Amino acid sequence: PNPPVYQFTIKTMNKFEIGVKIYSSDWLLKYGFSPREAARALKDWGISFVLAQSRFLHMPDSAVDSETPDGASYTKEDDLAFRAALAEEGIDYWATVCTFFNPAAIDQNPDLRPLGSDGRPMEQIDWYIGIAPSQEAYVAEQVSAIEKAVRELRPDGVFLSFTRWPGFWELWMPHHRRQDFPEYSYDTHTLQRFARETGINLPASDPQEIAQWIEKHARAEWTNWKCDLVANIIRQVKEASQRIQPDAQIMLNTLPFRAVDFDNAREKVFGQNVETLNEVVDIFEVMTYHQILKQPTAWIPGAGLEVKARSGRKTVCTIQAAPLYLDGIYKKDQRLPTLDAQEFTEAVNAVESAGLDGIVIFTWTDLLKEVFIHGNTQRIEAIRAAVEHRKQRLVS
Image (cartoon, rainbow, N blue to C red; front, side, top):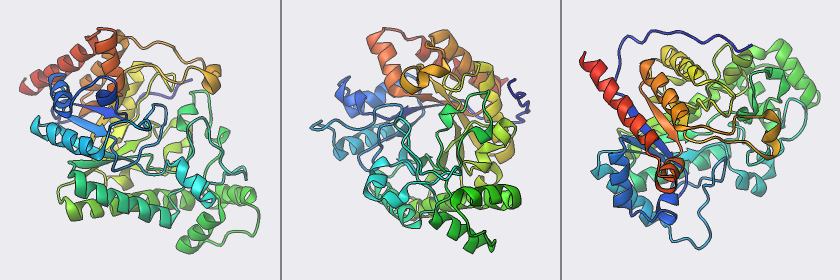
């Protein structure tokens, strides 16, 4: 059975903001928008902020194609022009970084490959393979890259995606348990650092047996250490960004698992503790991909409300604009193959009526396809209607 939906009362409401993930250069290369035209289209559709990939912060292909094709006429100058055009339209720009998702880095340095609680090195699952936050040298490189991007782009904030411990959480269906998936990382470097920083003496054994020992004797310490490490890395990013852009904020790509889901896997497996993170995160973006996780639209606001209530921070929920994970290794899970405008509207309205702070649409490319390929503007109309409805509620 599905876990219960949390019910929270939000005492105050902000305006309903609409964001969109721009994870590809389709707007330029496929649809032929200039940066100014793209910004004006977003403004017209009611978009108030974007989470954008750029040439300043490499974004590998994931569930969507983010890599810029070889020979494509898309440059850093286009990123700068797009960022400037968005500013002119009053649309906030968040520079996006895939903090611990970088398959090329693992290819170059195999020591970055995580080791599972099953004693096996992590293999790439479709497009995904993670990197453990315990890798100090890699973290330093990421912080440096973010600092350079902030210097060039002067964003309103930095959006940290994949900022957690490794795991392909999109495969976790409602019938699963936490123990159905390996936990990462039990590599020598991570275990030595854990022992050194906590003072816990680990048994001299193989990684799988150490993982079992930690689960039995030091589970709370292991979880807390993982969560603290993620928060401290975000603090490094925030401080580095604010040295250049003092008002730069941090938005975190947050797992949608609630405390009751999968034995609190969001903390135990992925190292995201909302109370710890609220010291360094300004906005929580909750990845409520309901079709991917085989959940109804009514499930969406509960995941966001728990984060908002526990953190006291601004919280937005991500809404899919199209179905994903239907073929290949995903076929056995039999996800629904459609996500029509009515379902999208239900998702938007569920978040707005719950009193949350907004939505993020995954992705802009899907919206562009609906409007310019299929001639369907219903999703755009749903966005505008939700913004207007919130305005009326605030006035009343």
